[in-house]
Length: 278
Image (cartoon, rainbow, N blue to C red; front, side, top):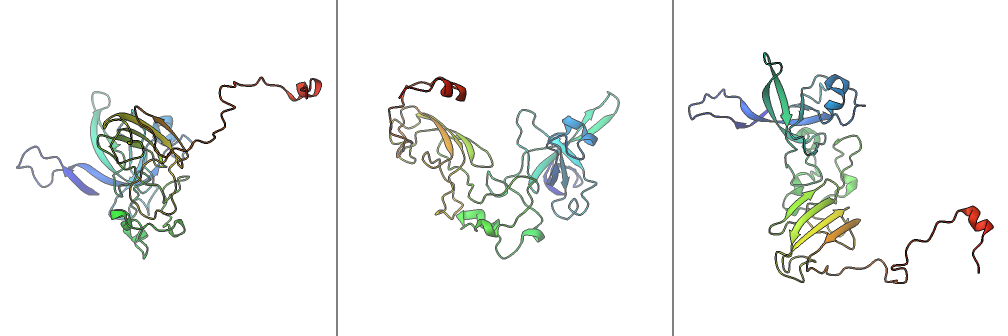
């Protein structure tokens, strides 16, 4: 396993000092109690437990039955890795019964290999090195490959790779939370004249943008970060202060339904016995 950081108490520590963190590859993960190994690792308490292998060799892929496990380090936030993503692992000792100590393995969220919110899987190089290595081409905004040419790297049971998912472009002072599938929350501000919501008001006027579903622009064949598109994203909420959303297109200009209220429900029997007057 890779040694990423050594814990040195002083400058004369010996070369044999154990690493504080190790990097491992996720081979499997327990997401519900129906997992075949959930009962062996605590039932409902096992949710989030990963099974991991070495990142340099095939250990864990060729022998998936006898793998070590680790639990999430955070309890307040669930951001669980996909299969083939890399996580940092730390081992700590806890007092089990005030007499004996028990080693507890905990893992951090996945490492940012590809600078993508979608996934950061890194399988063994022998399994993905080929003529159209799109994973190496994600850097520097290189042209992306069509979905038909994906490498079909296993990421999980239901998670499917979508090659149009991109990270959001940040602006000064932004606090951004991004999901894996184009769902995001931006705690941002006016940044004249860099984006569609910065045409009015003053710089640093606050704005919150909640987006669910990133627009798939088929004319954009790069991996460059993008920004929210109020007219083409699946759905979104903009909480503004002094901003006007440039280019916003309303769904309908028909104002006759405004403030009409909800009509009372009438069952099919009522319509037959008391038909509306014509």
